[in-house]
Image (cartoon, rainbow, N blue to C red; front, side):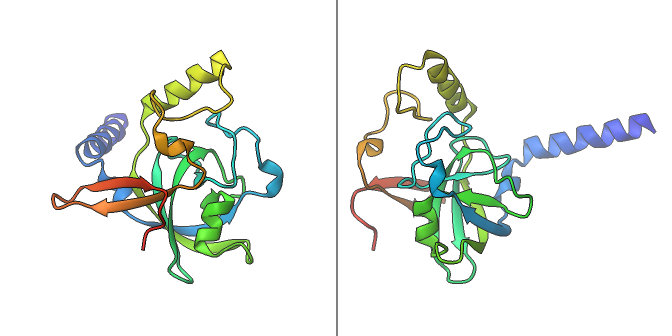
Length: 180
């Protein structure tokens, strides 16, 4: 019996290694957003929460993972970057920053039924960069990106657009100009 369960465990692990696209499926659940009292406080990644950035808290995805969130009630979409752990309420799928919640039209209701799909998974090297910067405590503006820091982070307003390329891959473009 022990060998059977060990075999099954190894088989499942091999399937996950061969087919890592298990995150291609969409997850459905309830989204909420951060309260104003969290502005400027450190997230689990070490970054400070900013209501003017499109970020989110998720229980399991690596920091830096990009997620497409769609409000199932009105069809509005936004893309967020995971930089925190949560939500703490078990009934919620994801906690969004104020700007992301505004994009989805859920400010007045406080919560919404959403679909969440992974665009790109975060990189474990990025997590190490955050941990190193926290140890040094030299910078108030901690980035999950490897150095040098991308110039789009320096801009006050940023738009993230995902373009589908001819080869089927996605390309993320950052801009000051709102997409049409």
